[in-house]
Length: 567
Image (tube, rainbow, N blue to C red):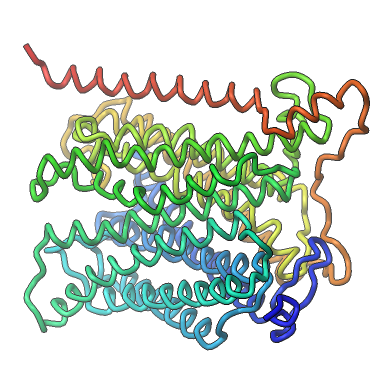
């Protein structure tokens, strides 16, 4: 079947900006999944604000009962519902538009969406009704109402249906080669994310189904240690889905906003494959202080094999900015080490969202993640706010910020509506990023003083001083700033979707794409060099990252040596 024949079988339109075919059935499901993602982001963000104001000792907004209730609510809405709804929308986009094919099945898309929505609403209702104050992890023997587990099961099954619907479209596209000889890199990243999602969601089903039957009184209680191990196959691996989806968005936004290139397709694809094989081992860092697994298992999972997943992130951490630099230099921005970076479109929220995501994820999330995932160091930090500071810099400062940047292009391209109040959209990523950086660093430094990650009243023990209170105050300020940035994003997006100026029949408004400088004899040679991927500015940034990592890593070993006095 030819690609042209295949595209005409479904209702399609041609994008007036990119020239790519857009399946109208897929477009509908991209829209409704993206809308629900933003709804759950707002719900989770409200929970985040309440928690930040409770962590702030000068305010301490919520009592103990509501603190744990909102903690449960916040975790599920932000880490599971918002992220996975948005990722399903992304999969439907890359699985149709980028592969130039139609949606595999409308019926499956409806089933997946209905299950995800009903499961999310059910779980949220039970939480807010006060029948599931067990936090997102819901560790046994803590027990919630059966509908809490059923809601998560329904959501997971719905997400699986959506993923398999995506795989169906990929299979059809692969057989017809509708996308040409080689699958686009962003679509390839989507396939990798979907593969990891299947593994993660199956872990969720394996953990939640027997817990649900136990809550119903039908079976015996599952072993708590078994539950913890299997649950983290869901809890952490879903965040690995986020990492892969986020990296795919980085590549896409680098190209859309600045003309960035992929300097080596083979290397980038190989890095994505390393994620499939090794990234799930990172789940082990949640079990390093547990007695139920042996030292050999812990050492293997947190050292030799896991470093191959770290290598994958390091590769992408180089190739994405290097491709951006090469693309900018090929446009003529060849002066100095960082001329390409100074001239990047910093007033474009799509660019600033993606690039700030890359920086926060690498310099805060990546450095802390590798360090805290080390078995010996983990014992210093595992049950402190340092862990929370780490994953807020990855999932929120990394994934959520990247998805926000993507939205500034999804709405004009898919909803065919333009953003109003562009001046506000331009500063939104910076407000959100600043808030998350303050929040994450405040949590990390508070955790370094010993503040527990899940304790409502840190003063009860009477061991925390002014430094802890100061850092928790920074957490509160960062939380307020991040919520303001989130609220601006939600309001701007809702206004654009329902009231924005239509762009049907024309290209989307330009956020400020860098113009190509006229070719001269002076810059001709420099441009030719950068066609080969030469990126001296990125090399400097990478060396700075590695220097920061070395300092942080050995500072933690010094702290460990101070704790363990070996003579």
